Length: 246
Picture (cartoon, one colour):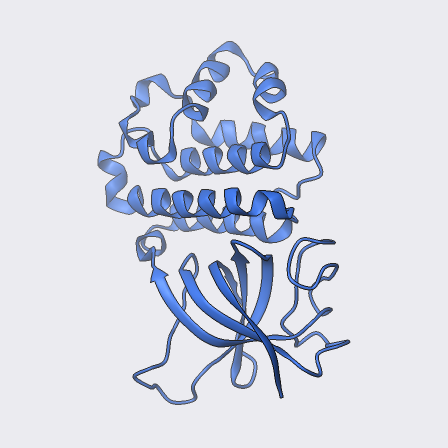
């Protein structure tokens, strides 16, 4: 029996394999943080069936099952740490059970899936958000970052990279990783940049001060290898913050 319902505005971070007639979706909601919900999958195609994909921006409502206390591993649950989403403390396999009542796709970024490297970097960013609790006061900023991030990944994916200047997927991911850590309150610019060589520091500073949407206008000759900067930033975050970073 269904219980209370809430409205959601969220991005799809993960799609787990369907079980029976449901598929589990891990979402990041602008108000409630990271949540996992069960979405009914039709056994036969229907005209009104909504099929969601990774990185989709979705709106709609989810409802709480009345008998959800102590739900097992098949339940839809909060996956973040204490206070990070609907239901407070929880992890995969614990917490309240939420089911999709209504779901609409507000924006889709299908270009991301057309290029392997772009898909890999966009997935890494989605995983970063899914793994790390986002406090309530930061959720609106992170939601806005995700909107800009997936739009940038899609804009500079595949063939578009040929005319995208310095905006390869590693560069976009670097900007996303930095922005997420900054919004979580870590002094990344002050501390991380100081660990870099002058050449890397100059390139990183240029990237960090450029909005995501404008990365394509940068001169590649002024940029160092984005993969090197990503590796250095990830190493710094693992050693100096509590963030879980791939």
